[in-house]
Length: 489
Ligand code: NAD
Image (cartoon, rainbow, N blue to C red):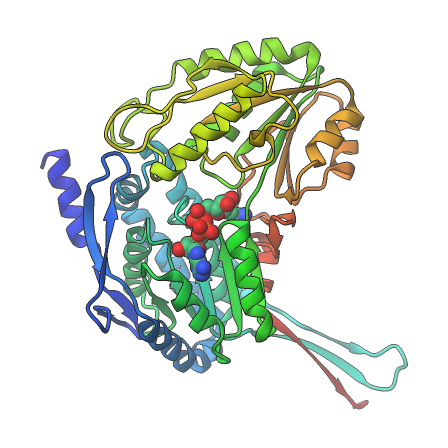
């Protein structure tokens, strides 16, 4: 098979329907949506686009399936997740290629995401049997206290386009491990990976109705209808802060439990005592992974004035050697952005920074070819007040500003409404500890440029969100606590 035949064969194997109550079916009005390849703009597949009624049918199925799934022994739930993990390993090349086709990231990075995303299945298969409560004498000695954990109920999971597999498994695995049933709504730009993954869970033996997938081009109305339905018990969203704020307002009416993984504006602070080789390697990973389209992407490089020129020279040398192209091509390190809007945003942020005094060390322009491409870019001397220091870039642009002393660095790093992740490079242990205490951030990479890991609690402070995904904390997002008082025996 040629590579294009292999792609066609794979796309033909992706389900094109909604997955509701264990059945694959078209939208009730027959509506469809098209999925495009961002490297060319061409349509790769047409799939069902759910109506509000389809969304409610998915919630019906999740509600019906809930009592039996909640009562399924944790070990059985765990074994289904573990089988899904194994099937994902068997089908990993298909899943990686599918992500590159619909999202654009280089194939090596898609493979990395399959490994990372798969770990949530394995991790939460191990956490399911460890859901426990406690029993004890109350302090007055006049009774016994029982604390027990219970699945929260049917959940609505909304995922973004930038990590099509990992953002789905990071929600689905803990929910199912806890005994919850789910309705998943993937981003309309990248729904194919979720459909393919739903088939994996189906093949792993997940009972009908436990997982339901609604792909749709009308996210707003469908989501609002599900969120306002009193049978829904939990909303988990990953996406932008403005959409998260809107969903929180909708969730307020039902006092719905929510988890929100929202935007970031990560500082990457390089002190004068840093190991510059490590800092440069970390910077490249923190900035260019996923073509810069990660909530954890380093957004502001804050570098001590005495090493700024050397740091800038070294990262520029690396970035100037990047190969831009379709993610399936050998040697490509930077793929297309998700769409033309993303290209326009990167372009306008670069222009604004340059107008305010920044210097373009490499790149800096839109690439004139089919698909949505922007050059891998390094800007230095970025001035305070530039929009690029306030807004999520979500593109391959590395922007360097400078600082003079530690207090200055901390003030600049914290000067944002976001607080998802911070990266710090220093060889001074005490300084590292001071930064752990003073940075307003949910996660921190201390001399490390990538922090995501299924065993760790992922999440943000301030407007970066509410709750944690992964780690021992992740399953508690899907559990309710009940306290019972009983008399002395
Ligand atoms: P987005 O907010 O536009 O969309 C996210 C999801 O919400 C998609 O499924 C979309 O279809 C849906 N959506 C959009 N409008 C909606 C509405 N009115 N009602 C219901 N659903 C709606 O975000 P995006 O562009 O897909 O993703 C990029 C953003 O996600 C960035 O801000 C990034 O930082 C953030 N993100 C955060 C994390 C994290 O863990 N904190 C991880 C990945 C991405």
